[in-house]
Length: 144
Image (cartoon, rainbow, N blue to C red; front, side, top):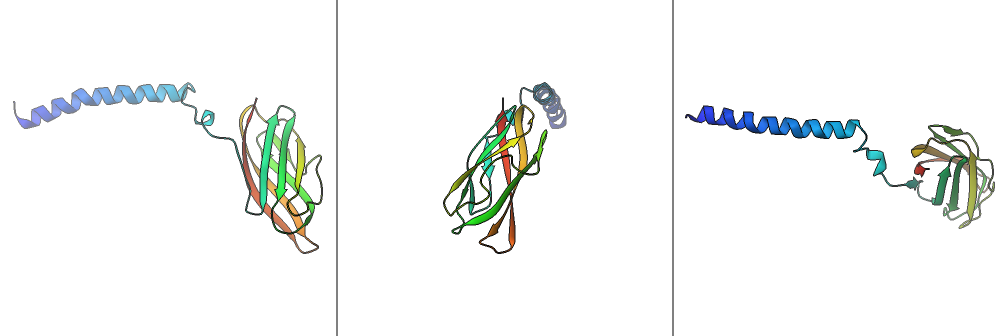
C-alpha cells in the first residue's frame, strides 16, 4: 500500500466520523437543546455614574431600581425601554429627581416576551439646571 492510498483511507474513515458529529451538533441546535439564550446571564448595564442596582420582569411589566452615582443631584429623570413586546417611552412610576447616592424605583407596564428578554434602556436627565443628558444601557432578563 502506498502513502497516498493510506492517506486517502484515513481521511475517508475519519471524515465520516466528523460529518456524523457535526450533524448531531446541528440537530441539537435546531431542536433547541443548545439554545444559547438559556446560558446567558441576566444583566443591567448602564454607563458610569448611573447604576442599575436591581431589576425584575414578569408578564405584567419590568421594574428597575436605578441609583444616582454621578456626584451631583439630577432632575427631570425619565427612563424609556425598548425591546421585543415591551416598548415604553416613559416609566409609569418613579421619582423625577434623584439626589446624589439616592435610588429610585421605576416600573414599566408592558408585556415582555417570556424567556430571555433583551432591550435598550434610555435614561434622560438634567444636571442641576444644566443641559439635558442622555445615557443608553442594556438590559437582559429572564421573564417567566
